[in-house]
Image 1 (cartoon, rainbow, N blue to C red):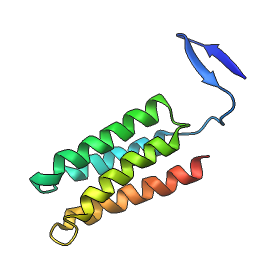
Image 2: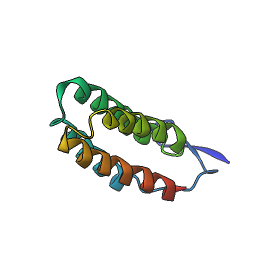
Image 3: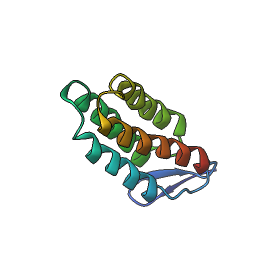
Length: 105
């Protein structure tokens, strides 16, 4: 069942209402940590996280799309994991976000 509620936003009741604040905080923290990554990967990782944040805000029920963005960021980190300790920290945060996503639905 779909209902229109406030400001013309459509809410699809086929999906449970999910708290996303914790996930958004986690992604914000990962994006902030990513500032300390080496130049070749910093922008790519931060962009993937930003796109995941936007996806969470716009369509949190589409967790597969969010997971793709987070996995893209993690794959980018793998290339520098041995040389940048910051990559481990950001990777751990992204891993936690993926676990959280799996528990959302």
